[in-house]
Figure 1: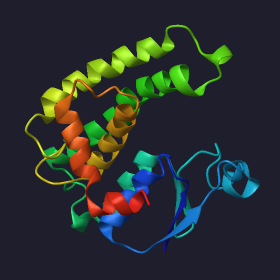
Figure 2 (figure 1 turned 60 degrees about the horizontal axis):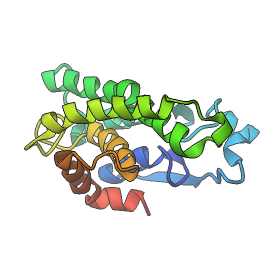
Figure 3 (figure 1 turned 120 degrees about the horizontal axis):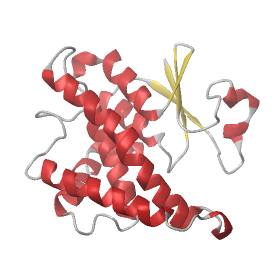
Figure 4 (figure 1 turned 180 degrees about the horizontal axis):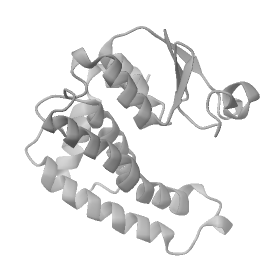
Amino acid sequence: MMKLYFARNTRATRPRWLLEELGVPYELVPVDVLQREHKSPEYLRIHPMGSMPALEDDGQPIFESAAILLHVADKYLEQGFAPPLGSPERAEYYQWMFFCMSTMEPPLSAYSAHSRFLPEEQQVVGEAERGRRRFTDIARMLESRLQGRTFLVGERFTAADVVMTSILEWGGSMGLLEDFPALRAYVERHLARPAARRARE
């Protein structure tokens, strides 16, 4: 059985959401980050950087939220949360998964850190604004891409929608989607899915 190490309000919600969509058995292992359980020797053996999330699949540790999603979606490929191997949609799916993690999330993380979470003496002048501008450019492109579309890839919900929704929700929580109604609608639609609600309980 798969074992998901989980803390609320972290990227661990992403694999939990997909596992709930799949309806497969898994064990949820709560990790208290306020008590720094994620830095314990036991957890560091699973995730050497002590971050969230981590998954064990038959004893094999896997970390990084997108990597976990890719693995789990492929493990149950017949359920359709990843496009068929070798298909044009599969290439597009990879494209958006990597775009989310390498292009979209870093500027949002910088904006969040340098406008909210870092102590004032550690905030770097201009970093928050650079992150905001970059994220806004990305959001403008996505607003056009998702206009009139229900899903990011093809005509069905995939693991790419899990990651995209998660990142856009984070941006929206900081007021960065006010000018992007299609993105707000996309987020609201997918967060209303029963599996998304269960993952956030």
